[in-house]
Amino acid sequence: MANSFDPATFDFQKQTSAANLKAAGAGIATSWEDLWERGGVKPWQMGFDTDDIKLAQQQGASLYGILQLATEAADQGLRIGQNAKDKLKEIRAEYNDLPSQAPINYGALGGYGFDTDDIKAMWGTGPANAQGVAYGMTSPEWTAGLDKVRDAWTWAQDQNLPNSSGVGTWIQNKENEQRSEKLRIERETVAETLRKENEQRDETLRKEKEDRDEKLRIEREAADEALRLETVRLAEEDRLFQQKLAEDNRLFQQKLEDDRKVEAANLKIETARLAEEDRLFQQGIADAQAAATQKAAEEAEAGRLLAREQAEAGRLASSRGGSSQTLAASGTATFKGKGLKSSENKRRKGRGTHQFKRPYGTSNLSIAATGKGNQHSTLNL
Image (cartoon, rainbow, N blue to C red; front, top):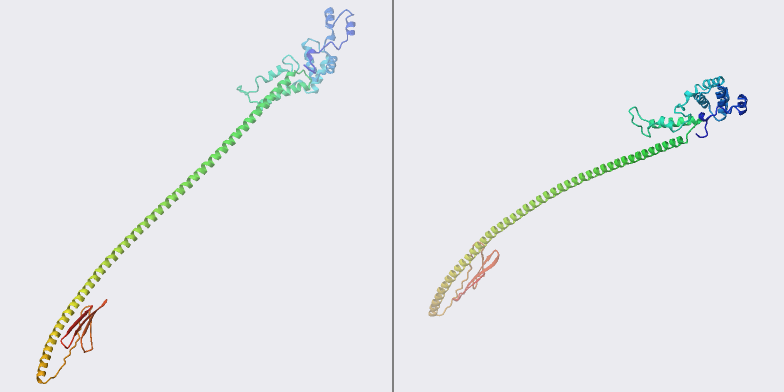
């Protein structure tokens, strides 16, 4: 025990001087015990009285220490003087039964102070519930248990009771253990909080990514669908365009074919018409030639007859005395037919001229005859 009052080491005989012992023992006894043995009666100086209380207080004993000192005196079998009893009664009354205010019975384990044996009695294996399950070092129960030990140690120090240096070390170790445990729990709590925050953040990011991916998927599907519909629309438009183009081309080809047929029909008709016109023209020419030839023959015959008549007349005239006559004839002929016209020479002298014309060209037929028997015919087409 250090710097404290320990009743167990108190010298109950110190308050009596050696001179008193010599006087009481007639100079023969060497100690109060020797005097007791020699006289057979226990000397009163070997008891516990107020002189011992004063001495104990001078040595640092508290009021609780004085009560402990009385217990030690009784344990040693010393007589408790009446004055000491009165003083002890006064102390208990003045301080409301001071021993009951002590956190523990500091003399229960044989000592009068607070040491590791008292801690073991208070602490045991540590605070636990009724089922023996230990509380955690950061629990209120564990803290309350440590506070009780600390309070007992502090109360012992306040009363200047014997205190073991190991008590402070034990309390410091427990405080360090509790502080370390709190730090560990705080670190774990922080780590768990960070883990949960990270998980929450990761979950939030995952959900955001899923939402983005889902949105992109929907947008892609919408875009693909729009593209598909647009492709279908364009394909349908192209199909309709190609169909219309094919139909237009068919109609165009049909129109070309119809036009070709019409043109061919028209050409056939025109060719037939022209052929008919040419036939009629050629027939007209042939008819005109035949008529002209016939007329020329007739005129030649008429001329021949006329010449003969003239010759006969000349002969007759010669025979009658010489007279002469001249006969002249001229004429025109007109031929009519489809697409054929003729014109007549109006000069009534010399020779006659006949002209035939087609609508698309010019044809001339000229026939001339002389009055002297010379026939001349001309055909211009």
